[in-house]
Length: 322
Image (cartoon, rainbow, N blue to C red; front, side, top):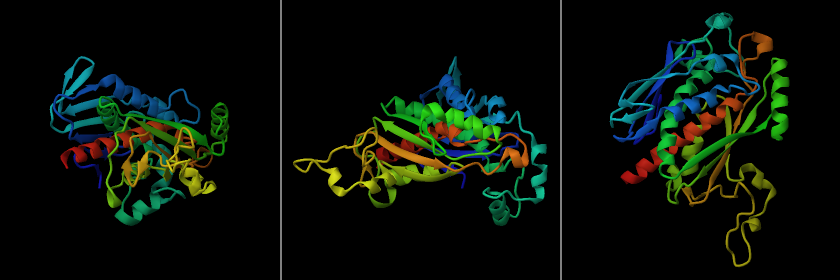
């Protein structure tokens, strides 16, 4: 399936080396104002311009959104009509010749083999739908959802908190430049914080808030791990760390709390925090040539924000309908 969400849904289309990538947003209420500058800024963050370890293609792509239907232009903004919003982002800097050798070869750690096995056919040019290029459409759609949430007082902020084993921000860029000069790649971790989410979002058991967030974030190409609150680091703690005198819960960790703002699958009104891990890119410049990221987590930051925004807007919409 290529559709995400129900009351607020996003359908993605397009391939890395096709004519364009794009999407259809449904569930945006009539009269919703969309800032074109905010959409553009989020796409520029995804391009990674000015950051170390980024694919030259990502920098060269213009990423101009063409709004096809569902909106009325009003200067630097769009006004939603309450009908599906369709848009596309043209691919202007694809170099398919770089992938000619892949017609009959599979890269280890990539989706080449599984796509061929499942469908009997695949787009070898850049990985097709398995390419990070697909995420440009997610970011455009997520930028709309993010604006809708911010008007409700809900703010989402993600950042790169680790590259390889390095956690010092001052040293991360140096490491990324080194890895890029070697034509290699490393993994990274993106941390995300949701501020202003009211208590009561999420359902018990099968529709837990963290389950929806995990499904959304793990759908991003190259994402291999998710935890919330203090996650796996809580192995170093004991249950007694949850309490102070009088038996009241205490947030002993900052900026992340033990619960991560979620209790029993439902938001508790405090900041929701989670982390996600991105693997080292499987396509290496030193082996295959071409243009590739040395750490895909760098440009994944706005993609994480986008998928988080799409998730929350859908869940809040579903809650309002219950």
